[in-house]
Amino acid sequence: SQELEQSPQSLIVQEGKNLTINCTSSKTLYGLYWYKQKYGEGLIFLMMLQKGGEEKSHEKITAKLDEKKQQSSLHITASQPSHAGIYLCGADRGDSNYQLIWGAGTKLIIKP
Amino acid sequence: NAGVTQTPKFQVLKTGQSMTLQCAQDMNHNSMYWYRQDPGMGLRLIYYSASEGTTDKGEVPNGYNVSRLNKREFSLRLESAAPSQTSVYFCASSESGSSGNTIYFGEGSWLTVV
Image (tube, rainbow over all chains, first blue to last red):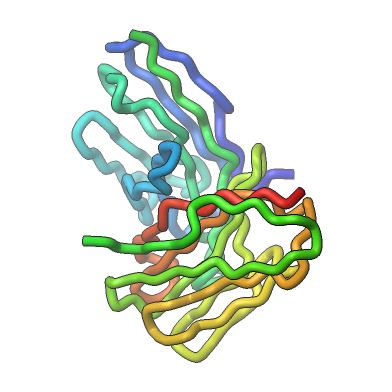
């Protein structure tokens, strides 16, 4: 079973619409990372969250970590074609300084 | 500004052949990692190197070996490739461990074993 659940698995959104991707753990997390992946470009770091209730924004992307530090959401406002790709969340469970666990990814398609 | 560079980008191997994936980073990072990515399974850690001179097994080390050649370079070797090793491989690095540090990834190496 996946220790870090991402939902939805895939998402098709009309350009200009908002969307949210979720990442959920059954255990408290010490850190939560969001990455974006495009074919042939590897993983691009978006944001890192460490504190309960923390929220960070970059351009039109906002990520939040809940107070219990078990769920994070990634929200995109007014989506654009450049937002298309696979979004991955990775988590630090606190049991190793080198081993993160990863969600399976959310594939985002933007319809023009 | 190269970051993490890995080669080759694509490779097709026959079962039983060996090959080495090369990785280099130019950020003076202490820690380096090799992950594999399979559909529906997210990233899984194969091996990591906390610092120059050390290597440790990750979640899925069987069938692989690694070498931390120096601070910059971390290679992954498949001694006798199997179809189950068909995957996308990512090398990554971070300043020192993953807790609280950004991990930087290479562009990936697509490996097919037939």
